[in-house]
Picture (cartoon, rainbow, N blue to C red):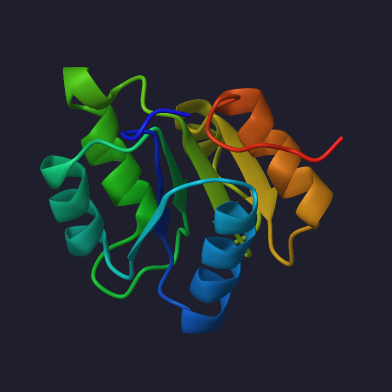
Length: 127
């Protein structure tokens, strides 16, 4: 993994945010955290992540609105985004824009498989 490969976790729940941070760090990822859509946008402008996980329920705007903003920017259209949400049913537009969708509460193996599928060089999975 290169020094610039990293995961941006966009999650407002501190417990889930810390859990995702620990999971991805233990799997060899470099992790940044953002609790709001504005903080996520600022983090992306500072350094583009290799992968982003996104909660749809954020305090300042919906994760869907953030995802739409990202997809409107040509340089970010290919950024792999894994939506991790308990907001069901998941809108077909979100599914079309996301590289993968993982429902909360999430299964660790399902989450890691999604990351490995959409951004294979981001983390190391134990054999």
